[in-house]
Every structure is written in C-alpha cells, then in structure tokens.
Image 1 (tube, rainbow, N blue to C red):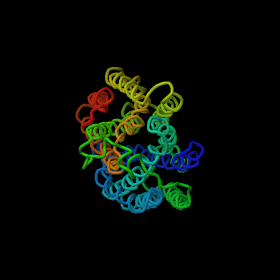
Image 2: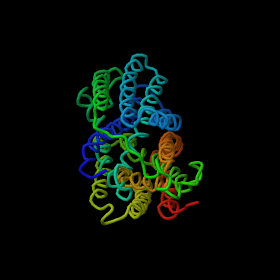
Image 3: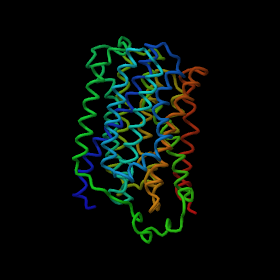
Length: 396
C-alpha cells in the first residue's frame, strides 16, 4: 500500500493502540486500589494483572478465527464492545465488594484486549514494508504509552481524591464515562476506512518460498523463539509500566502518583527514537540489541541502589523496553507467508506472559521485599538478548 494511503488507517489504528494502553494502565491503578479497599496482600493484588493477561493465552487463536471469518475491521469493532462490557462489570463488583467479580471483569477486559491486539498488530506490521514495521509499531507505541498514565490522572480528576482516599463506589462515574467512550469507538470503527490486507505469500505461496513447504507454524524456529521473547517481554514490561506506583507507596515516598507519568514518558521517548532512526539510521535488530543491554543495566540499578534512587530506575525501565516489542514482532513473523495470521496469533498468545510474571513478582515481593523482587527482571531480559543476537536468525 502506498505511503499516502496508509496515513488515515494508521490514525485509526493509533486510536486502538491508545485503548490498549489505557486498558493496561488501569491495571496499574487497580493493584494498589484493591489492596487499600479489599485489604489484599501483594500476591493477591497482582492477580488483577494475571487475570487480564490470562485471556491472551486462552483467546488468541479464537481471535484469529474471528479475523479469518469477519475480517480485521469488524474484529476491531467487536473488541471495543467487549471493553465496554468489561468496564461496566467493575461497577457491580464495587457494590458487591467482590474480588472474584473484579477478576472476572479484568479477564473480560483482557479478552477484549486479546481480540483487538490479534487484529491491530499484524495489520500495522503488514501495512507497509517489513523492514520498517518497527517504525510503524513505534508510532503506534506512542499512542499506547500516552494512555498508560491516563487512568490514574483521569480518575483523580473525576473523583478529586488521591488514590489512598478513593473508595470502591467512587469509581462509578469514571467507569460509566469509559463505557460510553468504548461504545463510541466501536461504532466509529465500523465506518473506518480500513481495507482488508494480506501479508506477502498469504495468497500466492511462490511469493514466500521459505513458507511454501511448511505444514505448521511449529516449523518456524524464529517464530517460536520470538513468541518466547514476547512472553517474557510482556511480563517484564508490565513490571516496568505498572509497578512504580505500588513501589513508591511501599517506599513511603510522598505523592507516589507523580511517578506514574515517567514509565509512559520513557516509552514515548524510545518510540520517538525508533520513528526517527528505523530503518535509515539503525536496523530493527540493532535497536533490539541496544535495548536489551540498557534493560540489563537498569535492572541492576533497581536492585543495587538505595530505595529512593531505585524508584527512578523502575520509572525509567520502560525506556529500555520501548523498542523491544516493535522489533521482535516483525522479526518473528518474517517469512511466514500463508501462516502469518496463525503466527501472529501465537505471538498474541505469548502476551499471556503478562499473567505469570507479575504474579511471580508479587510472591517474591511478599517473600523478599519490594526491591529484591525486581531480580526477576534480569534473567528474562537475557532471554530477549539471546533472541536479538541469535534466535531471530534460526531457520529450518
């Protein structure tokens, strides 16, 4: 598709990435919010994040089937109505003071997120040349990162209360506003100018010789290792984006909400660098390698510096994360041909790493303390580093 023809589609997809960021960001608010109101321990409160990302493991392949049946655009629209239902469910959960119902609402929100990401990630990747896919995903990432801190700011503005004073039913009005916006987004998407597009080799096997003789997505080692990298990446990304408010509270720092702006800012800065530099100045692969080294350094900074200093490493860890996802995704779906949709579904399923790793972090936090729990980041970033240097090259 010519450049001048995908500007408008990118604008609509940007709105959808903004929604993804908002849906993830609200988890960061609910972790300390439910700890305060339902008197939960850390492991229990991080089940909020786990419930959201468990949906990716369950519904990624059904989402691919939905896309194959009704197309990308209608699938995107369906996801917004699912989001509306999920946020509406938080209201009775508050009135019933039911943690189980909160988890169900988070799971439904995760289902909506799964369906949406199963459509928008491959769409933006194959919308233009594959070697500049990280650049387009970085543009979308800015939309995503701008929304990460919005839930805390939005809820504080509507309730006019700091998080420590917000009660369960105080969120009714903000949630009703969110439900209305999601319904409007769903309706707008139905009429959006989004063409149905296909990856190279999806229609004609000769256009992608490497995939032509394959029978299954499990015959693509670079895809499998890419899925593993996405799995661990999303888990540590959630720690980078969603734990700073909780960590600042644990350290007893004043105005802990002020730290929530920095993870999104760090992501945005990294994305801007990607937009400017990829692929003309630096390749997707080199960007990924630089980010892994930066992530390892910041992970060590978190666990080895005094608490008031380490919180800044947590707040800025997202800078190191920023170009990992945009680089891993196109590297993993390169040369999949007719398996592009199924391969993309496997990568979406891998987002379920966001369910396991935050819960592990919660247990480590209860057992080792808030700061030492961040040791979990180091081996996971080393896995991504392996993919950046070796894994993406492996072909069968």
